Image 1 (tube, rainbow, N blue to C red):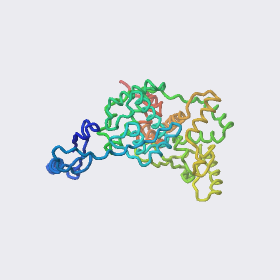
Image 2 (image 1 turned 120 degrees about the horizontal axis):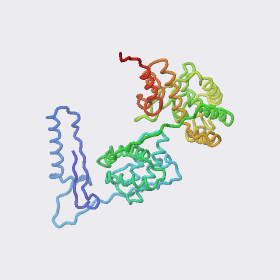
Image 3 (image 1 turned 90 degrees about the vertical axis):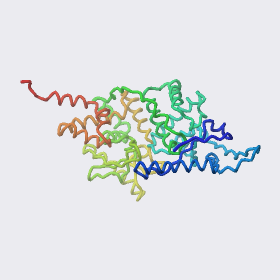
Image 4 (image 1 turned 120 degrees about the vertical axis):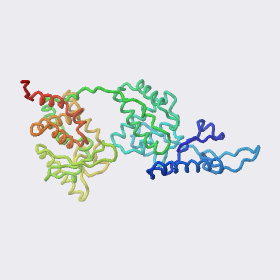
Length: 421
């Protein structure tokens, strides 16, 4: 049950009343009559507390009998919470550490509440950085609209709509796709605030998602692939080795970077990776190692064995600093963005090939579908490739990664020989 408690002494602080929510364990009971009886008991209890016992939900105290013409005594105001200033020279992860021990409530301002909501959600490190940028973009827009000090309990859908419109004015890279991303991530970090009853509902729920037509991802041609391979092998052999392993693995760059030597089973040609892009907790899944890429994996594992000999009993990361195997520590683990920087330098810079590293994942998916669909049905091939890519269904494969999906099925239909007469 929910109600609003009005106290004249707190009229300035709670002009619309203090929101109160009470639970009566009704979900334990399944039949309607018992549920109604429990709810009636809960209502009677609350009415008795308020009317007969003088209970004040704001101060959580029982009020003494009023004395005529007596001056009301107000409880001392709670000490204001001082939230750390968002130093944008710090990384998002460092700033979140400065919020340790803080718990949001109905009076927490909008921007600190969003940071505290992010702190209570489990995201992959890269996603945390992305959301940190989103919160800072929202802060700039909210400050321009004089909404940055708005209490989180007062946040409405119209406020977010205005903030998103202001973001579009302030951000030169704004697009419909970016707007959808802002909405999705804001919805996610507001959910922990709902659990803590900082606000009544998620204001993102009524904001429509914009339909975005995504052009097909540009992929390197065979000639470009040959140039890239030869150039990387000469300029940065370890990066060439990583690109080969990434292309054949079906994993994301961030997943491959986290692989340890103990995750690899060369005898059975499999490797365990941690998938963090699904909802909920990270999932460990096993991927096959293609025979064509097996010699490269063997070479990297030999280097890992040399590192392990110096640090017995310590897991070795396949891709540490400079993409060399190293023990798991802050000094030896490469940052995921370093992979993209190398691609930008050697491929886009040196060769002038404006294709992204991630396009190799699309390319490998299409070629695997071409090969497997010749040996089995397209539907069975889709299931196998989706499993290799750690997708829970074939939908993402069909709509995003396999850009030849419709063409492949059209040709299968065109090959059907059913005469009219």
